[in-house]
Amino acid sequence: MPILKNSEDLISLRASAQEKRQKDRASEATIFIGMGTCGIAAGASEVADAIRKELDERNLDTKVVNVGCIGICVKEPLVDIKLPGKARVTYHHVKPKMIPKIIEDHLLNGKVVKRWALAQISDENDTPVEGVITYQEHPFYSKQIRIALRNCGIIDPESIEEYIAADGYLALNKVLSETDSEDVIEEMKDSGLRGRGGAGFLTGLKWEFCMRARGYPKYVICNADEGDPGAFMDRSILEGDPHAVIEGMIIASYAIGAPEGYIYCRAEYPLAIKRLKKAIAQAHEYGLLGDNILGSDFSFDLKVKEGAGAFVCGEETALIASIEGKRGEPRPRPPYPAVSGLWGKPTNVNNVKSFAITPQIMLKGADWFSSIGTSGSTGTAVFALTGNIENTGLIEVPMGITLREIIYDVGEGIPNKKNFKAVQTGGPLGGCLPTASLDTPVDFDSLTKAGATMGSGGMIVVDQDTCMVELARYFLTFASAESCGKCVPCRIGGQRLLEILTRITEGHGKMEDLDEIEYISKYMREDSLCALGQLTPGPVMASLRFFRDEYEAHIKEHFCPAGVCQGMFTYTIDEDNCIGCGLCMKACPQNAISGEKKQPHTIDQNLCIQCGACYQACKTNVIDITRLQETTSAQAA
View 1: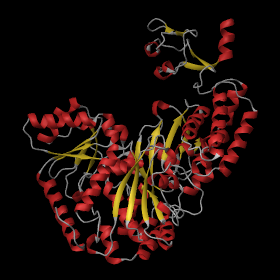
View 2 (view 1 turned 90 degrees about the horizontal axis):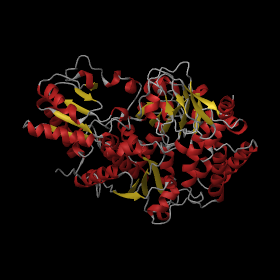
View 3 (view 1 turned 45 degrees about the vertical axis):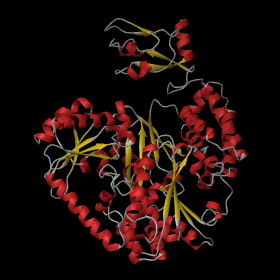
View 4 (view 1 turned 90 degrees about the vertical axis):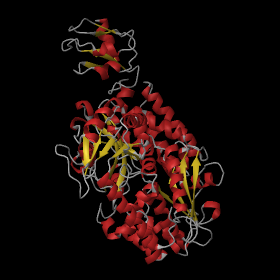
């Protein structure tokens, strides 16, 4: 392998890597398999085994490449076939039994199996496939601008030369050969990039504080401790394009004058850690980490620190304490880490997405990046779009896009013709927004003004069947359990809020509880030591603000309108409209439903456990959620 001793070596390697890539694409077929965590969970490993078995049986020496997640996780497992001179075609929901036909028809005979094809990617010299849409034409991708995710699902994340062929480390070369640290910081400030970890502080300004702080050595830390329920943005980037994060960290370290850095990644991400460590080893072997990088006077080394999975370690001072071998607890600020961080030295902490975007800013310029998004929130936002929505997955959209566009255009709406109810942004510490807020622009300031937060990028959509009181209780259960317990407002306040919400969902709430929720939340926000305690009341207060009627129904009427909180409702079948299909009877785990085929069915309330299986199974919407007292009165009559 080549050791890149100077700028000329990198440029030469880039040219040879690009030439090899073009030659390979023109002369040999390639199969790409989506082997991110989401793909593996959906069965990609079994599909990969089936592909290799089929190739062996046919004595085919076809190149097989593992790639990361391209974003549309709902369609996993994904397999791409790239024939010489032809567009790269993606097949979705691939099962092992589909492989022989895909190999026979597409790989050997050049005929795309269009009924299984999702989309195609065409290079400049490729012949497109008729009858298969491009990724840009697919609703999921049509409004996306991929910067942090530009290589995910496209290149082999375990090949440094593929990254270099895709202009990788070109930004680092530009920085080392053409700029000094102040130039880099000014470029980052001019770009307007705000930290993608949740707080939204200007990245360039944060770097400047650390650069000007007294003390040596200085440190750069990548916060990859992603612990939000339903969030997988950082994991996917590390699995799909680890070198982008490494390059961004090297540039940041050059800007602030740090000789050493850490990537703090939770141990629950074994694939991300594996690929990250391999990428770091490759960067060392090629001379892109270590002493005198690319022949310059600048040296930088990088290590991975595996976290034990404490949510509070997403807070930068708790994270720093964990790296130091201490209990992961936040400390009062000031001093901020930029002045006194790791081992008391100036330390810069940024999120995975911030570092992944950095090389593109330095390569293409601040003006290019700031032209995307809004004046106060430039560039793109990466979200894990999950919940009750057709297209779940990882998206990267320009700041300023509305919630409606994300949910109904990119996400293609709510499944099963159900109604949208709310969207939770910012993870378990964020806030939920109702239908009336669908036209809210997605940027730092607009979401905060609306009553939610940008957070680190979780976006959970819920439909008409979601109880907002129970949803708030769920997030509160998570947040209170993850409290480190160091400060009283978070430790005690979270538990008291959880007790109140639990009481309400069990039908024992009082109207005074709503005043108590607001009182406790106020002091948690004002007096908690870190963002975990300060933001824990967020989902509760947002749901109380926008869905107060549901709280009051639980308390005053002992009724859960969504039919979620057990003991507060019953399921009944509208016998006048029941067609007797039997789906509800098959779904019931208690054999509580009876009836003849094509005749109205009934539910035995003495056997029903209110699990909701019948409600979910019914395709004709004839199962109603009824107040308990109404059912009791009807039975008595």
